[in-house]
Length: 98
Figure 1: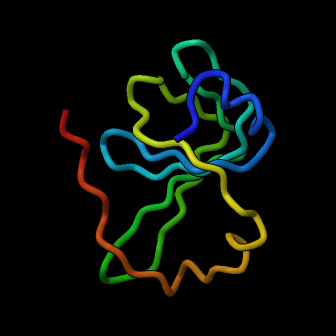
Figure 2 (figure 1 turned 90 degrees about the horizontal axis):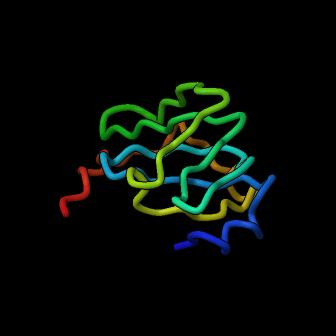
């Protein structure tokens, strides 16, 4: 997991964020602060289902509070673009319990 100063290396790159409530938000990291609050641009939420393909809900410019972030990871843009998300089936993530 990236956090704090480690995020400097992925500014202006595509990242995936898993939130504590199980949401998967993908976007371009534009900024962050000492509390790991992050700003994403060109973002969308990927909603997984076992019955239909992945839905992508457009969010645009989006701020996520650091205390709601579970995992931040870099995305391989080439690999991500090659995936046919309409064919992907998966159970939605459950919320993180502390």
